[in-house]
View 1: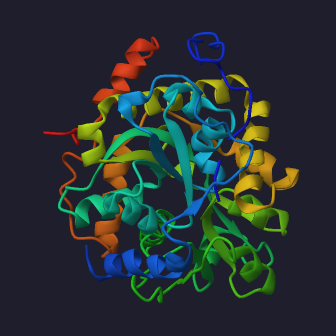
View 2: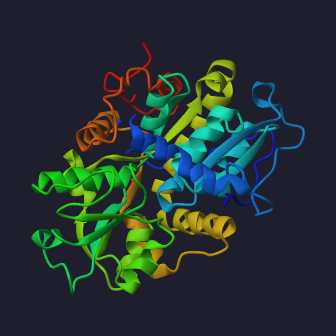
View 3: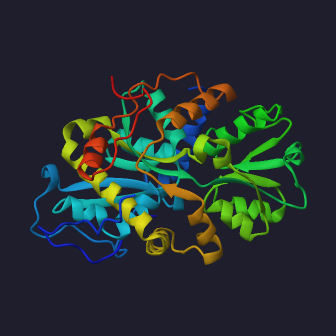
Length: 385
C-alpha cells in the first residue's frame, strides 16, 4: 500500500503551489507489539510503493544531505491525508530534489515502529498510541515526534436497530481495531466514564470489546457479530454506508473538538545525522497541508487516487465524502492531547505511567513554520530536555 502524482517541478524552481490567503508497558503492549509483526512478516515491514504514478528524483538536482533516498512510511488511511497527498502530488519529491522519496505503507503501528527501529524507515506518519508505546518501550531512545498531521476522524457507529442511545451500549458488542491501539484506549476510557467496568485485556465486562481489524469490521457489522464500532475513517463511513448510525463523534469529547489522530515521527538517529532532510520533509508536509486546505476537492481526489494505488481500490463517494469532512489536517501535534491519551491508557491498565518528556522535538517544524510565516507550535512540556 503506497503513495503520489505527476507534474514535477524542475530543479531551481520554487516547489510550492500558490499560498492561500492568510488565514501515552505492560503485557498488553507486548501483545500489541508482536502480533501485528507476525502477521506482516511474510510481506516485510510494509508494502513498498511501486510504479503508481508518483514522481521520482529530479534528474540533475542536488541531493538533500547527500542522501540517495529518504524512506517515508504511512498507513492507507484517509486520516494520513498529508502523506497521501504529499506523495501523490509530488510535494515530498520536489522538496527532496535529487534525493529519492521512497514509500512504504503499513497496516499497523507496531510494524512501522519496528521498521523505524531497524533502520529500514526514516520518517513516518503514525497514530498517537503506537508512538507513545514505542517511545515508552525503548526508554525514550528510538523516536521523536516532529510534527502533527491530523485531528479527529474517529466515531462510534452503531446498529440503530440495537442501539438507540448511549445507555443502550451497555451489554452490547463493540469493535475496536486492536488491543491497546488509539481507538481501543479511547473507547475503554469513554466506557469507564459511563460507569461501566471492562477488563482491558479480555475485553469482557459491562460492554464486550471485540478487537477487529478495520478491514473486516464492516463484514462483522453486516453479519451482526458486533453491534457497533469505535473506529477511524474511512471505516466509520463504511459502516454508515452499511446502515450504521453515528452515535458519537470523538471530537465532541475534546476541548475545541481537537485531538491528535496522526503524528509525524522520525528515528532519533536519522534526526541527529540528517537534520536538513527532516526539515525538508517537514517543509513539504506543511506545504501539503496548506494546499489541502486551499484545494479540498482536488486534495480529496488526490488522496483517493493514492489509496487506490496502494490498496487496489478507491473509496466510493458515499464513503469518501463524509470521511473527508470528519477530520482536519494540522501541523500542530496537539501535544496536550497526546499526554491525555497516555493517561487514558494508564487508567485502563494498558500502560505503566510513561515518562514522555523528550518525545517531541519541534524545533525543525517551528523553523519551517517561521519561514512560512506561520506561528510556532507547542510541545506541552514534553519536548527534548
